[in-house]
Length: 84
Image: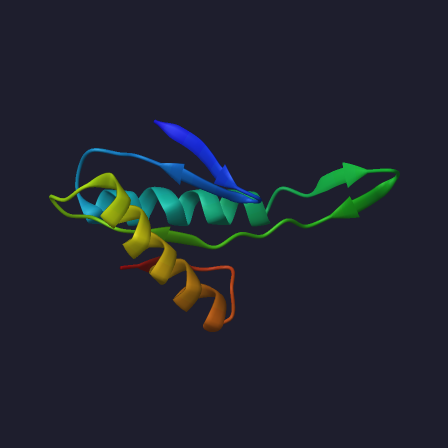
């Protein structure tokens, strides 16, 4: 399941291992960065940071953990995958 939760923030709910989620997020991050966007005759590189939270808990708690991991990713320089 994928949903926009605000601004430029999205949530993807996956089943499986944390490592599988990290692998997918890293692939998405890399593909995003290596695929320039053409707009108005100009080329732009888009980057993104991804955060991952896992565990057997409520969705709201997972979102809080992912949000904290995203904050750490941004503080560490952006364009990265962080777990929480």
